[in-house]
Length: 229
Image 1 (tube, rainbow, N blue to C red):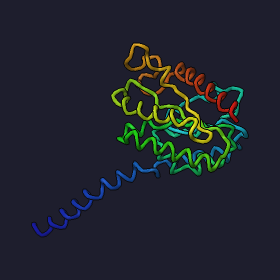
Image 2: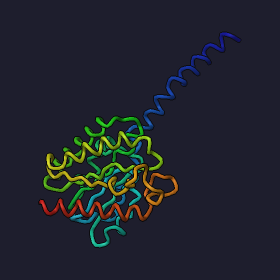
Image 3: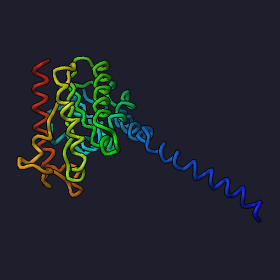
Image 4: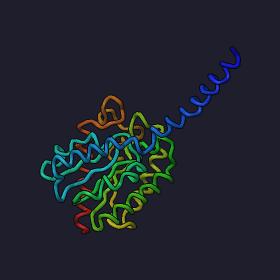
């Protein structure tokens, strides 16, 4: 019996070594290929509008009812929930260049910090994504929405705050770069995490009222950006 057990044990050990690799691959940028294909299918079925407000980023973008927030403007929602800045960089060619954008609005960084990236790494990715956008869409305003403070990720806020401060400082130094500070209106004056009214029950994703308030902040950034064109 023992000689038979040795090959079986070897196979078992081999599969045990392979499984973590497969799991890691499942977390890579390729996991978004279905989302990219869904965008392609949507665009094939309905031609994307011209001069649109193009939104790109993670679930805060994907869940945004853009037609409610901007009923008089053409909008395109290229949000894919759970994504990071690195994911938007990897799939950049399918997210931004194909579209006729009046302005490009980006929200990402939240998941980046959650998955262990440092403030410095996230800031570098913001700059990298911005460089790609400017090269593909010169003269088009790019609005980066600051990382939101949330109840469920409050312990990560110090690192997120570092990102926001550095990204805010990029306005005026990078071409067509603008910052929308949503954290300023979300944080209570007395300190601490934002109130529950900002979120759904998970304490992470925005409530309809939260989105309405974010819309006002983004509109203010849009007006400033378009005044400078």
